[in-house]
Length: 274
Ligand code: ATR
Image (cartoon, rainbow, N blue to C red):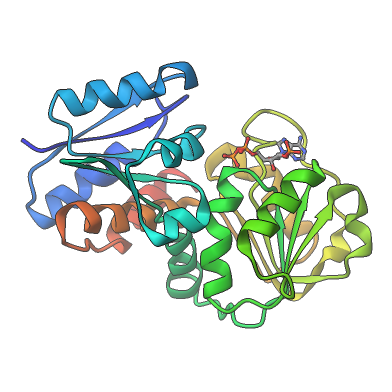
């Protein structure tokens, strides 16, 4: 049976094995999909071991997405632009890396939630791997100006430089956030809540009328930001569960050349992750 896995740290609570099992049942494509816990120091060896055992592909999750991009022999254009990889495909000449996080987010926002992203003045909170993964796809989806706001200004500068659209992408320091005006789309790509730290202080005036607020996390980790978003009276407060299912479907397409239906799988998971 064809072997796939998700690799992360921690990874025990990953929903990816359940999502891919559901896609397998739906499409009739037999596969095995497991979870591999690897600390950063063990990441390269864990990948090599999986390949040696015949593993065909992996999803890569936190905190390995940038390391995965660095060790790929081949990168898709969108993975190269993101500098981050969430899908690996084993080839005869080494790992090929792709990034489906950005397209997954855009699909969830536009198709599941019916948002028109075009022209939206956008605030991206964070400049780490998660932010890098989604920024190019947001720009491609036609958002307006993108403000990359980060606690460490150098990382905001680096991400803005990598996006290479200086007239449209503006790096800013988190400390100066109150001076930035308001936004039609606010994306939380910080890892603060996942690491048990408080959300950075955000003025509710950041939300424009009819703004959408999106947390790339789901479950417990999305609660603080979505609570802030509701207090700021946004029109849409969206967690990362739909993005997770959509990036998984794009990964499945990459591996199996078949695009599964995401709505039933999303509905099943949503029941359990209110
Ligand atoms: P990920 O892959 O989840 O993006 P990461 O690459 O470690 O993880 O990036 C974490 C992001 O969350 C960074 O933008 C980080 O800000 P710094 O670059 O200043 O470290 C941000 N972040 C983490 N904890 C934060 C906190 N308590 N307040 C504000 N930003 C935080």
